[in-house]
Image (cartoon, rainbow, N blue to C red; front, side, top):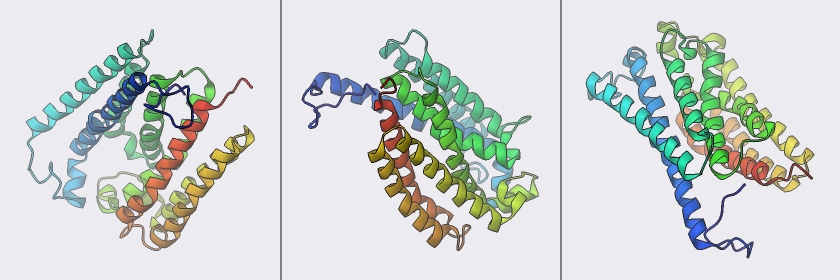
Length: 284
């Protein structure tokens, strides 16, 4: 709620160029932290522990195909993890945090990334825990990080709403599992498409994504944010269209096309909701 524009055309009191440039730089560094470093760490460690499955499903990937060596993979994992934690601490110092909130969130997220992929816990062995952990990480952690950089995580809604929104992330995670059914089944991973079959899983996917956003829109309406509620509903309509035309007819053949078509609207909905909650006056 405290992000400053470089020059806000809607608010004459928010036109401090230097303050706006500093906040833009903080946002850029936050994206580097969440994207290339910690998401990169998550993806690399997942690919390492999935190398046997990928040898069945996608043998052309860098690790099973031998394009990169074990030593290179280990170096990349440590470089991304330690680099990400260093950036997180730097953001805490930059934001004058008494408690290193961004660092703590980054440590927690890195731990979830590890137990998602690695034995003995390996959350992805179970479709429910794995899909929700994945969805929660992709949605809640960046949301909390942005709120910590430009505001305060001082209300329950800032913690609870992203976690509930992550139910939709569970549906998105299911889409990623359609292409891996053969390898998951061969190696005993109980992904939701393996457990329930493709036909049931595709409706679980569509249902979780749609129902979650309808619930969030209803919540925004209930706190007096009718405009944001309407925006979220408008962004949901094309997602429903792509579910009907791509996901439901053939989720295996259309998984990438569906994600590319539908997810931008989903992400804009998350951004709209985060902006709404970050600027809402809960004391009124």
